[in-house]
Image 1 (cartoon, chains in turn red, cyan):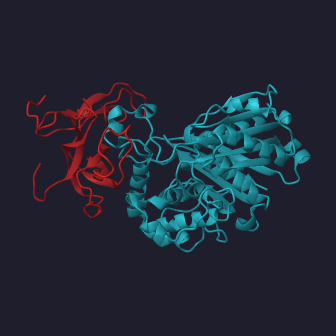
Image 2 (cartoon, rainbow over the protein chains, first blue to last red):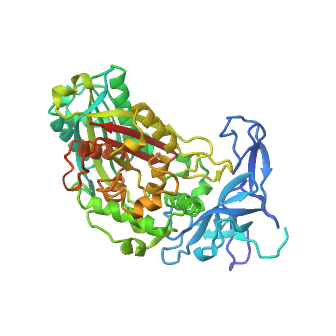
Image 3 (cartoon, rainbow over the protein chains, first blue to last red):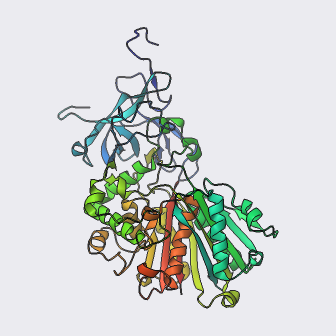
Length: 153
Length: 379
């Protein structure tokens, strides 16, 4: 909870998707040792072999853009949790990000300008507020942002 | 061995109507019976379904309480295709000689708003604005365009072609042709796809009467043979709607397996097809489904579409009735509409949009959560 009335309470969109709070948040997946398959978020059974001996893994924070689009119209609520009007809606980028050779994850992108989105570009995971829910809380989720040039992991 | 023939076809126009989805289904059923020249009491078995317009078997109350076995089918976007496959199999198995397959629907306006739980996903997926089929189609074609050199002009030309075909179809919903500039200039919904590149949820109904080929000639002088009907779910590594993750080991779409099975079962190759109806939820889907179904190789679509080879009058006309783009997508009826159009074409009854010398036809539906149903038909 936050005492400052000017700041909305922040809540994560779901527990267990990523490590939080953290200065270097990571997505949480399941790795199935028999098939080598990694899934996101955590799952009980391997979609390739139906094995159930998966292990919780933290996924790499950096990856490359595999494909992208920009969500240009306000999604219906529900299932979308945001309460903004079509007039206030800000389009957002969506993409699949390849994390090493482990897994591709679907994510919001912090960039919504098509001219700045290129397949293969380097991205890093961040946690961002993306919407305000019906109770006035600011919802947080994972997203991927361009890696600033010359920065080291 | 006896074959499966289609002896009667019926449709309720697609679009927006005052009738309930079920009533539209009943109109289609009566039209199919009239086309076959039979009574409802002649139908020995029925399979039918809708996604959002009620239980198909309820319509026996309208069509007649003959006591026939009527099985409801619910299989997402492949509901109509699944009803057809069930009808096909029941005739092949010798269970019945005259069988009806029926599909109808009526959806609210605007994009579908599915519940994440119905697709095995956490609520967070919808909450965070990822539960949109439009995003999936955009993400898939964006990658494909970069890999195989498909241009935005080609995406636009698919919509132009389908709307032109729809303008020649009295049962289509949208009958106004669009120019390439109009398609490209319509609002961007999800890059690279604009509003006029997408189909919309709609309404409509289709019914088909199938018969064992041994008895088909009793009812019609022009039976059309359903040479094959195949349905597949997604294999590991395919790229489907509503996936929070994908494997780096990329695999094929279910359409690849369904189409291959349909061609093999029919003993007909993709190069022998006179016309095809493939799922065109949006322009990119038609482009990618052409190669997934074996109708061309990856990247060849650019030339085929730019030179008009898939137009009526071209080498391989695709979506001759306007496809989902001109007809809308009433989920339960959509796959059967493709077969309805194929039968019309093969019987030479397609009027202004008739494909010359049509001998064989192919149909393909695709939908969430990664299912595909294909058929091959011939004279």
